[in-house]
Length: 279
Image (tube, rainbow, N blue to C red; front, side, top):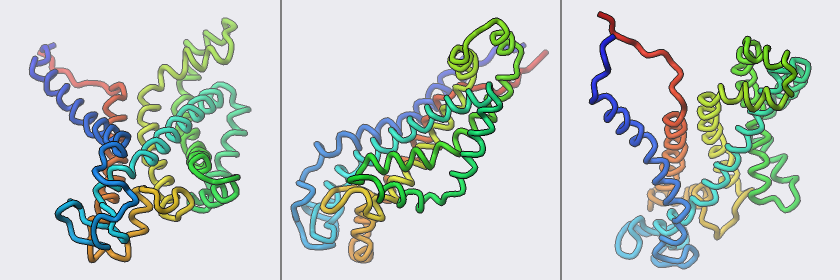
């Protein structure tokens, strides 16, 4: 077998950094954005829908507030909410999916429940949960993202965990008297790391969609809060006057979802077989 060229490892490392760095930078900027904003987010500094220039590099919004400052300050809540929802969905789905694979009777109940929840349209579910939640707010939106995300995720984890649960070493551990939680956390879940990281990336994208939809429907943050989705709704009527008031937050939402998904894929263990050259 021919040894791998030494140059392959540096290239692989650079590729890994290239896939991981955009998400880290964007998340860091979104979290620190409120402190980086050059102007107060609720103070007009120019005319309504003013063109970029001077004190407002991305122009003004419908009230003449600095779009650049509001863009910097408007990503923190969305990032935190989406990350928290994606983590909760992945953790809950991992536990339910592993137990479902090990206990088929419990798994059938989980599958039927997931089937019913999957039939609920995302926007309708978001409205039902957020509007019926006492006080609404971010907690209601995160709860809606978790409730809407778990049914899809648990079906995926159950399918991936089923072959592992039926493998010889898991059956041997069960026959040896190991408890259910030992089988879940020591035998099944460690072999699903790649699946769970990929699932986290996908659920983060879905959570961004749910949180952004809530902001666009104004059942989340309310004016004059700086929020990317809310900025799109507020400034839509003036998109022809200052398109950056809509384009900038729209691009950031899309880039955020894609970059975190790529980062999660880069962190996932490579489980595929590698081709080798024989002589």
